[in-house]
Image 1 (tube, protein in one colour):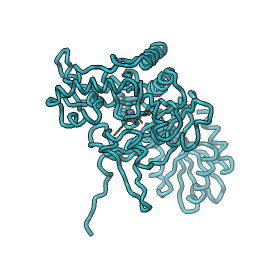
Image 2: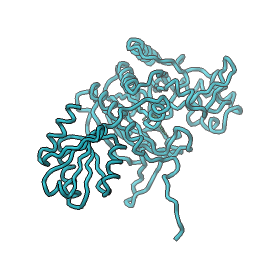
Image 3: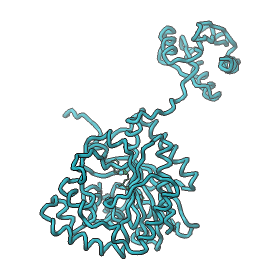
Image 4: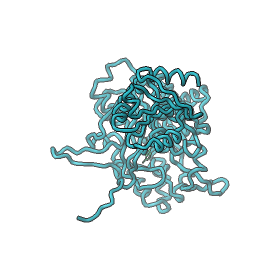
Length: 444
Ligand code: HAM
């Protein structure tokens, strides 16, 4: 048989023990802030009907066009590995009749997502996200709360230089007119656009504003801006969002070209970056039109989101507005490491159980369980027989006391407590062992 070297599929990765601590810290922080703001946790399946996404995210988006993992089941269903979390949560909201609950309904989630993207820095084919969604609230205060929730989580995680970019992409009233203006402008410059964008003029012109190609960026810089063409309702709504952000002291800047890669958004869209990321990542550079200088900017946001007032209806539910956002966990972990954000060390064991001989080994297994019940951090090395080796291990771990059980102690029902600092040993009754250890630890 041919020898195969198995490895993770391209663009996917293991979350190794060292990273689990970061994941847990992020989970715990998100959970505690979710609880404070009244969000309830929801889990949806990893796969959904593929049409949920093509309808919800939009047929002409990169995610649906190029990046979905689609599979056909034996029963003939066409399913997709979920590329994002909003459409599944909306599906669950509709399916479980959550419109009849007191509104707003606030949900949050944490899990793996899948996009068959071109492998590159910070873009994985399986990545982890946590997200927050609020249903049933039209007020611009909701956008501010969603942004605040992500800002709070990242601040709790010790991110200091966060930048929030915001824009409004209007609604079904004003966006079609703006699209026409934009298409007219782009048509006159079509030959200078990249191949993808030439195709986008017809299919999804707004996405051109988000193109990373330098030649498209130059054209984009002169393009009409949607913010100047919002209808009165969208204009007032956006003004109020900004007033809320001002009031809350959140550091935002307007980005008239922020359009996001999913079609379900209406009005407000936002992304959150760490400004330090600019120094950390060197894989993207953009020419500043004013200074004509190359600026190292990475567009890899930590968080992205916005309002989606038509999505619930589009997916078969009632006319209920929604707003939310999602954060990329790998990107947050990478930044935490780059910033040298320290995590509290897991508590170290204070006791080591050393045993010599078969009967002592059996006893120490039982003792180990007693220490667990007494909540005293204990280490062991049941596979080692030599006392010298075991004491060396105990020393390396840095425990305060080692309990030694040999044949004699097993017969007499005693244990030896060795103070690792001074090397002093005392024999105590086995049934008093926990009490004696506690007494010593207290006196230390
Ligand atoms: P998104 O901008 O596509 O939005 O993803 C949100 C975040 O997930 C990004 O800012 C990024 O940190 C992370 N992310 C996305 N793709 C990848 C990837 N390939 N590898 C690593 N990280 C990635 C959404 O998914 C929307 N569902 C957010 C939302 C919720 N809007 C409203 N509610």
